[in-house]
Image (cartoon, rainbow over all chains, first blue to last red; front, side, top):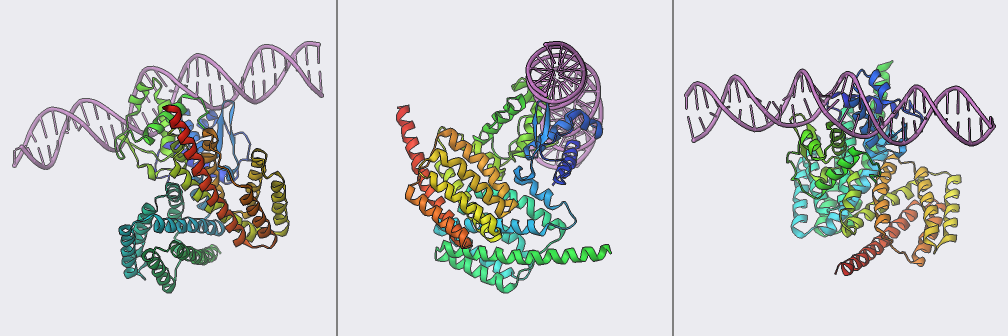
Length: 241
Length: 241
DNA sequence: GCCTTATATTTGGTCCGACCAATTTGGTCC
DNA sequence: GGACCAAATTGGTCGGACCAAATATAAGGC
């Protein structure tokens, strides 16, 4: 993210972080475009584009007479990534909320996939699981196959709303976790159980089973993620001392 | 939405709808800023701001050399509202997906509220339900109280991720449904059952019960909405002939 | 004819200076 | 203290200009 090395993006990123760090009170007047242009030594056009982006994020409201800062919890999902990257290690509570939400949506997707998918699609899903099972243990090698599976399952489930939400969530979350180097570890035993349950769910057209399996998996992921973060936090503080 | 009567917003709205109507193929080159400026008889600056908004929506990708159109299902949630308003009556499938997703998230919120809320908060929630129960039957009068309840429940649940998603969904959905005049009708009996289950859930700290009640409610809402839409569709076609 | 290379064109990113309309601000007057 | 009016501020838009990167085009070599 923010790899776009344009000035307007840079300004937007800086201002976004300032707002997320609560450097402005909600409802407070935001500096004028001309002031910001002076501060960043940029043209007003560049500042305007940056502000336009912040407005899209729901962080400010621009209206003639001046822009105003909005409450963070009234913003768009797109602020979650930056919010999580605010510190050197991810906010454990936020990650937990993330996984919980993601789990609920993936679980719903699994259910829909079973309910809406035809025989051929379900067989395909089953085959993909078998492929993944073969790679169980090799986390790195499994990752792409796993994503591919989730993606196809979303296609079969055919719920655009969930799909769009998951797009945003993935974009916000996965990237941050990768960058911060948090890798929750799941026991092989649990993984096997998940895969088997999913396989059975697709084969016997049991949506509830597949949904439950996913739900359980994400509940385990939450625990694992919490551990991974607390470990990372400990090592960070150690290093600081 | 799009009540902002600025030129750049107007351009953005027009182009957004064109993309949503599939007038450009995914991956295709988007007209240049200068061409668009000529077409809309506006300055390049105004066009640039519009394009910047489209990029935030995930509908196009701007890069030196030209902007490219992206696949709709890779966009942001914020396109759901416009997508739903594309026709004279809402897309039944989309509304159904919407309610299903919303239901899953509200259900999760109910569970979290019960799990995370303290005694005082749960009592407050219970009181709000009693208030709503008194207004049962009067749909219009109930609406604000109901929203207030959902909002407070979200506060108690304290899951920022879900909250932000619901912000976006509500902004996209509720407004459209209101504008299109679709009002799903829920039987008073079902409503009473929902309220009683919720009350019991909060009182006895049974998160599963509250979650299930919400889930059931939204499942009924889906059916009701489908009926309301099909009715609206029929009357529309009748009127057209 | 096909492929590579060099050139010209297009395109996005940025800047400047200017103007308008609406809001905000400050002062004045009652 | 409150209502009213004028000046300063602010966002919205315009036009023209320049740069660097990417694209399309023409020229050249095989």
